Every structure is written in C-alpha cells, then in structure tokens.
Length: 342
Image 1 (cartoon, rainbow, N blue to C red):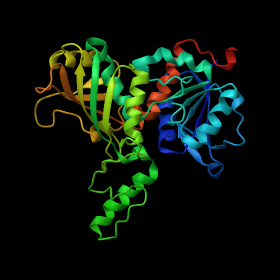
Image 2 (image 1 turned 180 degrees about the vertical axis):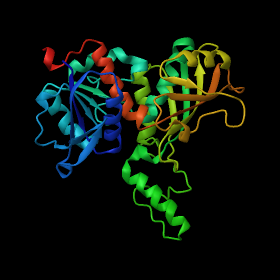
Image 3 (image 1 turned 135 degrees about the vertical axis):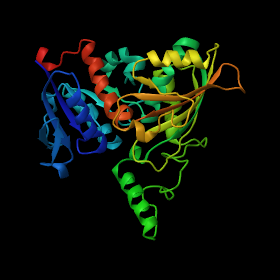
Image 4 (image 1 turned 120 degrees about the vertical axis):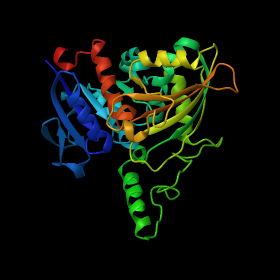
C-alpha cells in the first residue's frame, strides 16, 4: 500500500510547488488531497497529469491521511497542525510557528535527516526558513571537514519569499515605471522595483530583523549550537531565487581548493565556479532546479582560516517545497509505514 498525502495551502506558490515535486518524487503514493480555505472549494490544482479539486480545511477528514504537507501560513498552522497531528497524520510544516519548539525537529535532510524520527513528540516536523536551508546545505560538509566558528551572511532574497502579493507588486511597479504611474508601496516598506530593501520581517529589540534572527537560531538548531551566525537580509527585485554571500571562519585550516572538492561531492549541491565572465550561478539560472549552487569560492586574505563563497537556490523549491518532500522521503526511508500498515 502507498502513502496518502494532504497538501494544505494547495493554491499558494509553495503549495503548487509541493504538488509538482511530490508528483515527480519516487514516493509510493495512493492518494493526494488538495486542501485550502473555504473560498477555494472546488478550485482545481494540478498533480502530475491529474487535476485535483480543493477541499475545505474546516470539513476535511485528516484521519485518512498519512502525511500532511502544510504551507498555509503561520496563523493557520498554529491552529491546524496540532489538530491534524491529533488525527494521526504527520505534519511537515513550512511556517515559522514550530521551528524553535524544542519538541519539534527542524530538518534539512542533507544535514540532519535522522532528526525526523523525533516527529513522535508532537506529530510535527518543521521546515526551516528558505534562506537558512540553502545556507546549511552548503555549510554542513565544510563544518564536518574543518569546524565552522562563525558565519557572516548577506542575503539577496527574491520577492516570492514574501508570497504572491509581493510578486504582483514588483510586477506592477516595474510596469508602472515605464508608464509613469505613481508607485506607492503596499506590501513593502519602500518601492521594490529597481531597488533593494534591507528589511525582511519585523524588527527586533537588538536591531536585527526576524529574518536575520531566524538564520542564526535555526542554523544553531540544525547544524551546531556552537556556530555563530550574523546576517543582513535584503529583499531584491527578482521574482524567484535567493542568493547569499557567505564569509565563513573555521577552527582549522581549509583551502579554497579543498573546500571546492568537498562541496562537489556533497549531497544536494552543485559547484559552478569558473573564474571567468559568467562562470558562476545567478538566481535566474537556478529557477526550477533542485540543487543548491555554490560559486565564487575563495580564501579571505584578511582573516586566517576563512573562506568566501556565493550560494544560490530556488527558494520555492529547495527553500520550501522540495525540502518538505525530501523530509517526507527521509521519514519513509527510516521506517514510517503510515496508517495502512498500522
């Protein structure tokens, strides 16, 4: 018998990607249900060569589901993830609500796949923040080789990380510039078209934004509590694909050449690092790809045992939907049988 999945938030950017990637996966699937809010009842979404009609979350029977992939936002997850888990399904949640709960594993399969087994605490597994996911995939093999002390990261994050309304605002503002329309920001604090905004999520007491705090706290939980992280998170006028500039200080010596060789052999990564015009990956290049790409690997001449590198990934795929499906695969590969085998 195969597994039965519910995609909660199936009509959103990440939900539709979850359906696409789940259809492409090797998981033995018996049934998939598209679940959303009441206003989406009857709306159709694609799953492979099938069209699925959306079910109302308020009326759906989650007891017939083995795994629920949840991407309906934090407010919905806070209420519904425990209810879905109580119905007997394992919830893989893409919101920030459960990430720092000590009883909920925070999982990136290339980094800490065995942690999925801790789902038994609350029936919930948390998907990390998109910017954290691609960073720790690149950091893990280097940490194993030379022990990371500190990471300084600046992000260049696409508007899709904030949802469809922010993608629409970039599109409308970009068109508006060429037609001399008034450009009033609605979903961003400032104009996003032809601009960059060093502000993602709310500001915290110390001056960091919550996005910057997430990168620090989540990396410590996933990778190693001893690793120090400081971040500056910036929204840029691209539609899909997050990029990050990393400065990584190690306990032990690690040359750029050695790091390049290690990263080439690491799961989930592709190294594109030619020291020539265009010999690196940009956000446009990574759209639709599963891998996290690493470029511009070089030694920092100002600091011992320190490397710089450039990391790029499709934030809707590895940064969200793909990681969630890979978490489900990691759970199944570690013996989770679902209700049919119970």
